[in-house]
Image (cartoon, rainbow, N blue to C red; front, side):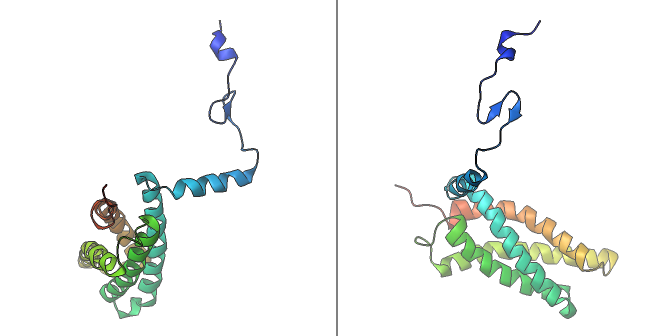
Length: 170
């Protein structure tokens, strides 16, 4: 026997009769997403942090590939510097909405110090791979750097949010 509460379903959060209903207009999704991402809670900041990380990582990859002929460590250093400068400024203005509270220099100095830890970790990882396997090619090196950078990025998000770009307390 079917329970009466299962026969009639009321719409809850866009769900009707077990199926997700499409928004009446597809254009409604973009303003809702935009509004959500402009909020200053940890979830919205983390989403923006990931987007900035993707943009700065793309710059890193371009610099790394362009300078691969100079050696992996040189390419890593140049890519790290370029991507860190971009990421720190984007985090200051976009991720943490701190353009009015934190100066460019402070963001670069403190955020760059945190990125220095990432540079050391990626340099050690590259040196370790080269010592163990020799030259493995550009794509595996970029994959290794992405994995190390991703792990350090989580720690960096917490540090930037709680230390560098913290909102003033009332």
